[in-house]
Amino acid sequence: MKCPRCGHEMVMDGHRKIDMLMCYDCGYIEGRNTGDMNAPKASTNYERLRGLNFNETVAFIAQGLGLDENKLATWMDSAIA
Image (tube, helix red, strand yellow):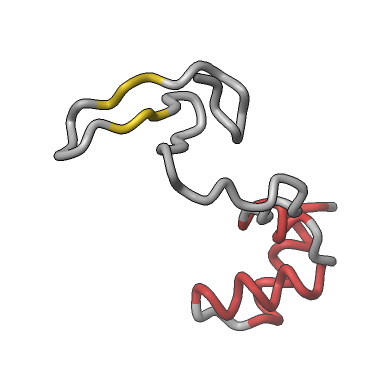
């Protein structure tokens, strides 16, 4: 049987009380909701951070590390130049 989510071949998983078909490529298990395949994927923290401008990045890092924003901005500005 082909996986409805990714199209790869599904394998019988006998490690449960009831044997079920499972796709080892995407993790789909028989009978589970496949979800909306056209939904936008969630962005990672790195992708979100790359989307910030300089001031937003300084505020984000300073808040997370408990630093003074002005000192961090000066340090980052000197490192870039």
